[in-house]
Image (tube, rainbow, N blue to C red):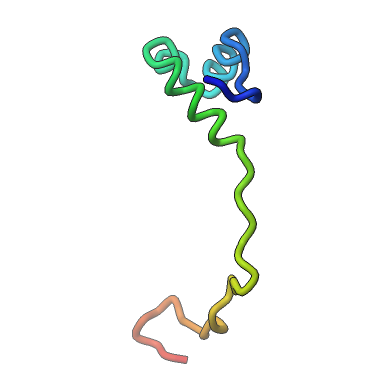
Length: 68
């Protein structure tokens, strides 16, 4: 792991234990560490023309037989 943000083995073992991944870390330490580092990366920014809402939500009823 060449990433500077990767924790050392002691820190990684503690983090894995806290999240219930102790046994997995014992078997696959590189995989768990890589997943941890990857999960800490920032998500890239959205494109300029991205619209999270494509159209207004329509009204709906929990009862499919009853229309509104």
